[in-house]
Picture 1 (cartoon, rainbow, N blue to C red):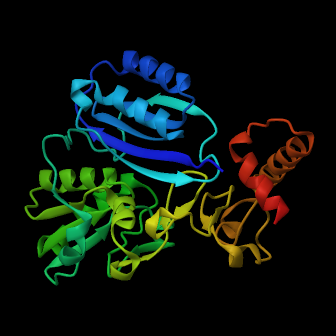
Picture 2: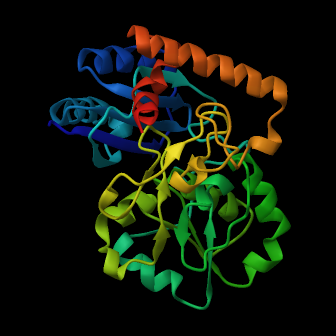
Length: 314
């Protein structure tokens, strides 16, 4: 079976012509048969795409041919099933939504720390380690002794940093996220606030899991990813989690045994938070998806079809 190459990348740089560039990029991706999402903003580019290894290589060469993006770094992993089902290039005000204006990571940010040096840094008692991801991501895995700000979105992190400025000012601060983009922007925000000793994990958790052997790792659990794989572990192997399509939380086999779990409708994490009206809508959506599967037709939930088909068979 041919494995599907998944490439994740981002780069902070000034882009002025994003409307024109969007069309060029989308046409090129479509011609190569790629699937996934690329975000463009005046502050740079951010994307995760999938396809054949040769197609991934071609699109990365195309992107890096732009002088502004020549230093773009990417990470590759592999999947047995398509992690995406369509190709999108979108224009945004930010390539990662922090909701803070006048932050420019391309000119000011913390110090990069390579995965090989990360363990030593976060083991230092004079370093505070902060997970910049959302709470539902942290729940299934994080680094030993890392602080969880318990945010529901990245937009909440600046407020948390300001509220905890006194505590964070006492020591060096090391920040991390999935692929590096959120922690890089977080350190830029902190530098703008006047913090001096701020560090971030180069390449994020994904690069760390790819680089560091499990027996030497300080990572605990799985890393949540925003595609059909749901989670990956050491060596970027696809993890044991599925996704609740009602609340978008990662769920495991134990969660599926709960009386609150209904495929596509609810799970133990969201049952008490979702109204009867919404559960009714989810139930109708699930019914239509399953009918489409039986008829071998596409439904708006086609981005979920392959995964749901597998769940129904379990």
